[in-house]
Length: 100
Image 1 (cartoon, rainbow, N blue to C red):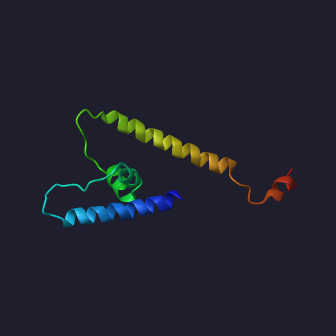
Image 2 (cartoon, rainbow, N blue to C red):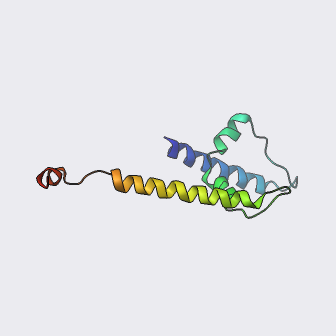
């Protein structure tokens, strides 16, 4: 369901960008977006990947927080990988009882 919403939002986002670039009569104009449209566009793959991969820094940005966020993400990925490997499904449950 969420993947379908993301695909719809991405298509809508690309369509809005295409028509905004096509209307060059008013430079730097953004199309009028309602709250509902902005809510749907929050799920757009295109916009989210563009924001996540941006290397722009802003005023008052604390660089050390990015390092802490990276370490935190690594810790979460490592923990989930370990949990799946340790508590994952047993492919042959009969072998567990035959070895006991």
